[in-house]
Length: 337
Image (tube, rainbow, N blue to C red; front, side, top):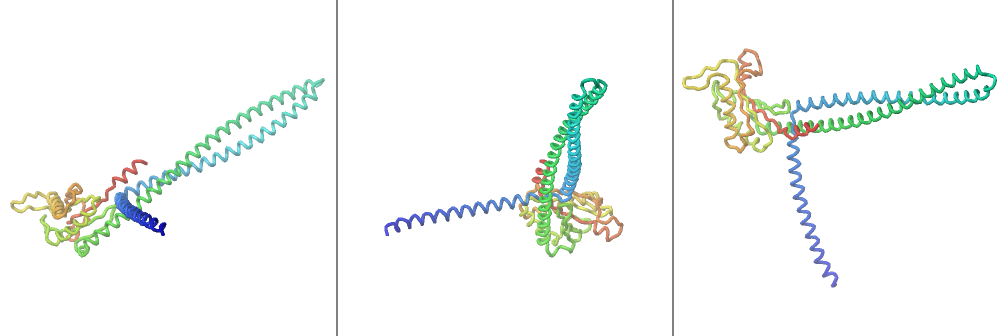
């Protein structure tokens, strides 16, 4: 009974310690999970740029594989030549021994035969020395080619590992951009296909809004419907802090005619004004860092449809919001290659 009273407090203390450790580990794992999610988001890369890097590494891997195959063939040929030289050395050594025995038997009274045998013996010695020299050269060459083959094999394996890493990063980047595109489509549900489209291109998400949704003809004042769409987009972008936001204003090719008192000179001015107006609406009710924005006017020079028709001009009058993931971490990794 006395032992039970002693052990019960000890058991309670141990239970309390385990509960504390479990809670701390849960907090650590939660923080670690948030850190990994942040690192995952930072691995978003520009699709087209990584694809080019992927092709370049694939080409280098194919070149290394070709060099490896060539060196392997040369090593096998060197081995064959080395085996042939060893056979020749063995044959010449046997012949040399036979000539030595014959020379011993023909010493007295057979000078002419002896001279012939001596000449043949010297020739055999010369050929034997040549073969031995060739065999040594082949062995050295074989060792050199083995070293080169091992080096190329190692380089090929390293290149293949890097290629696998880039493919993995490219896949992660594509998934991240796709997830961002889905979030934007969800946030702008009801506006899409009503003057607004959301697409993926070159590792970026493009939100294209035509002027009937945002602006009246020749104006850079945004109407209520356009403001509602921009506020929904701004709320989403405020949460995704690793995305750079580029606003591009586009006009048609009809020359701009300024009304009395207006300061706008031409389509360049109008496109820039529209871009900066969109930036102001996006930042009006949000805490988006202004450093994330790039506002530019493209005037009439990047049309969607170059035709000189009313329908084509309607398509060209648009504002594009281009969302680009932060590629700093990916560039740092690629520079290390």
